[in-house]
Image (cartoon, rainbow, N blue to C red):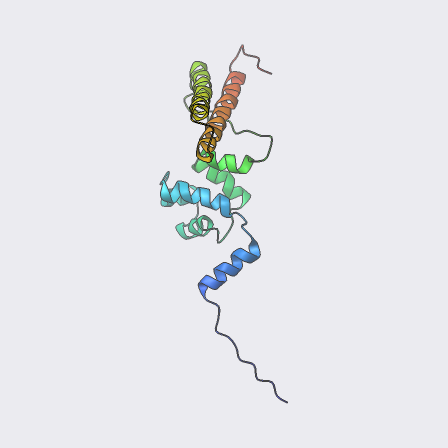
Length: 175
């Protein structure tokens, strides 16, 4: 008895993309989504400029942005240099005991210690203000909770940056 096999049509691009996502999991999807938001939606900087800074073609960067291909560790490092957005570091450091801190680059203007300390105090006051208003209104909802967490993250970065700033000044011993 002869068997007759019929070949199915080749899977569509949509099917291939679905299978790739399913088989690969969400490797890099969330990080790519953050980068996509920064470069495509907010245009800070534009995709073309970021690709040039990363020394890759627009098409190559686009494949990273839509998570067709994951960013390599070296590309992530170069991306952080080209697009110094705290959301990228927050994602990478989430769940660790580390906090991102800004440090002045060589030749870059270094803000005053007073300005750094003021950022910390203003950030803490913002957190208290949001919490006070939420408690007066009956409690924190998920939106307010996310805002508080965002302000706390921002204040932690400011405090860590102030520590680095103090460590680089002569006459200050913060350790």
